Length: 362
Image 1 (cartoon, rainbow, N blue to C red):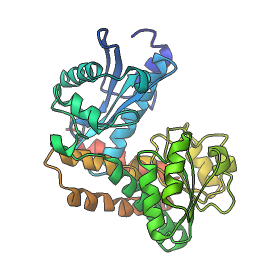
Image 2: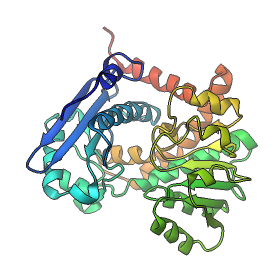
Image 3: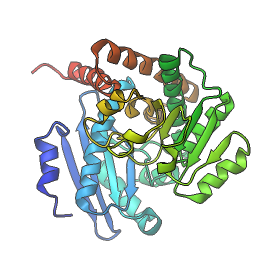
Image 4: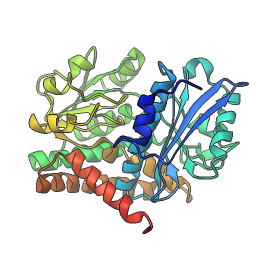
């Protein structure tokens, strides 16, 4: 893999968004594997983060995504109270076209070559069955099936954590954690989003959904003929009148210079990683009076689950830890108010403090 531009190198070595410890470019010509493994920090322990399988427009874009996602995992793991640093891997290509057992095994060998500095799991484009294959070559693999000693689908607790974050936002903004009769818009009802719908409907919330896949939308509408409606696209969703909460649950960058000015929701709380398209968006949200629940805080249920898998998985123990996302989110809102800064900045300060205190003195 070549042609990594100075833009990526600047991010890695010289920008505030960099500071990564290690980036590994992986290629296996026999299977067609091209992958990037980024380790942002091991201050708190081995880096932990999923494997994204995606048809990037360029190799540069793939490297940049790996860097951003790995950094986000450092903050997520720190805020979740885990003894893990942040890492992420991306495999370049359309998983529907090139994903094979040989490719996944080759990827597993690359992860294994890091000797435990990076622990992998599922992400966009990879599933439990894929991690079972990777684990045949790499013991530092989580997100495996219960039959293979794993915890299974981590999206179950990811959605539960987002739900707890929504409850915390409701408590902070409206003085009551109940979401009954609140109108919640969800962009993306795939792995995590469809579980989130279940939590919200169980509490009596009204839900509006959208997804690029018609079958995903139809599955939700068939299951919930009442209390759930669909709109054509995200552009329509964010402009929906009466929306209380907007939940981006697809890819990152959902909050940007175009979307923030037209958001009707009072709260943004979703499962997608890296929702803020660039620094400064968090202030734009605050200036509009929109309460933002930092993505890496509320979507940490999944990483809590896979981290527990390394020590002998117990679902009830994990759910109890994920329940604490409610308290953590409330604490961030309180810190933001006290310091006069947006919640995203408050969360960063808390995470950075934990990572700094974990580093041995020089």
